[in-house]
Length: 162
Image 1 (cartoon, rainbow, N blue to C red):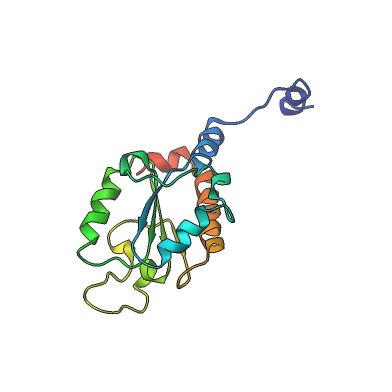
Image 2: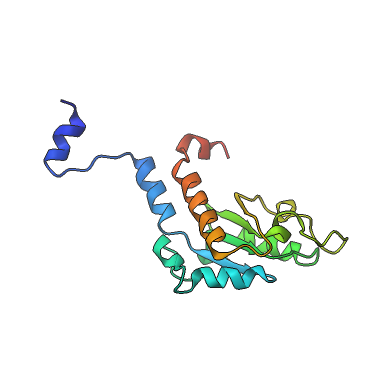
């Protein structure tokens, strides 16, 4: 009989520090709203009662980058807005993550011209892409769950290299 089986019978939970920290990070992500176009309406709908992103620990969207660790870029990003987006990303607390919501944020969408960035990954590193024009609230929730899986799989030794 191993230690895990013996301790479990006595009501003791064993885990690793890495697992506990990643669990805390996934259940307390605070998103910063950065809605720029029609995708922002779908992002707001995902926060409403029908879809309720509160069950993932995202009680409300933070207006300040200093209180956020998840940036959801919803919509097209113009070249003039790019430096503002980068400045807000730099002000966010570490560790920080980015979700590109919609085709415009992911690859420029139907706006193939000089004024629109052809993907927000030109400005900030993106962790999860959510496809659609505009994507449904279910798609954003799927992107959040995908990000949670990615964060749960993070290892301390990988974070030290960054």
